[in-house]
Image (cartoon, rainbow, N blue to C red):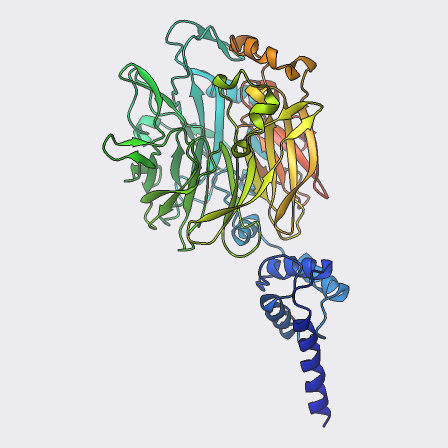
Length: 541
């Protein structure tokens, strides 16, 4: 009799839970996030009790040897938080669970010395080894990976150059007297790093060829290189997000070919069959300017795919498991920066992309008019696990007075507040890349909300006058050099369990290179210079 009464009570309580489906609750919302973080798959985080949430909480209680009372409230939230706090997930496992593509932009603890400090190249080291090419006027990027399968981190760096075809030269700060568009050189340099943190430069020509050269002999350029093990052999491979301006038959053009180099052994790669998203099969031309990229399993087939941002939209490059890719247009929202993650916790990868590149043809417009075009704003898209995406949310640019930080050269995703969902940090600038700010967005129920802003270069009053913009761009040497980050990296530099952001590739201003955003918790960050970071970092000179 007692057993029957107990069964009736349990049935009644679950009936009550099911009967409350459709009503949002903050406790349910919090429980869903925590359940997903524990691997119980409660479905979308929406605060609504559905069948997936019921099944997840029931299984959770069964595993604890307890009986669920049929009501999700603060008691359940407390228990779930206690169990989540006991988790000791590695960054790699956490990123995998949340669908975040580390893709060479995570600095792990193999880069620490015996004193517990990260060992990283200093600004002086980068100026010496990166900016000595005759074509480079700024450093574009750097990444980390395992290029020989020994478990030790290796290092790759590259730059975007300017050939100054009609005269002029280069300076420490930028282009001087260049009268032509950037010809897009790609001086890639690869370094192996031994256990004593000695950097050994490898012969790039002996390693691999990135593709065809233009009329001046410059190879295809890049604004981003994705590093991941595309063929599953334990050695990282390369996907080149090609943003070069090529001089072909005397004319400049964007052709956006995406070279892919697949490993054949330690420090050995060969070209994959992939070239890019073809827009015209007759002329064999490709969608141009793959400015940025990110990697993850877009189609849920167990291998790593790539999404690039293009003029025409976001292009999905689907991997066959061997490092051969097939490209398709998966969103018509054009962009510059992009980052991947499972923002709504449904098991499918989503992405955020944003416009981030100025166009002098727009100089007749004020910054407000130009940047208010909907297609040029930052936007969140949900994926369905089949390489298809739908628009969810548009993020308005950050403003100081009438000045609009409309362009986004970089977006980085991670669970910055350790609550089980994907947040983002973006480097944003104004029109013509004037002014600079780091923006932090918190994930709330699968949507993004601005949580913090760190100004690195405040806008001048005259930048808000549209008449000023045209005169500014006539001579780039007179343009106020900015401080945006081309591609930031994830690092818990102070080892407090909160992920920080490191920019070792700030363009044009070397004084801004190697700065950090230190995560203070609650989605608040502090800007820290390399000198201030020396308590955590040993800088290689």
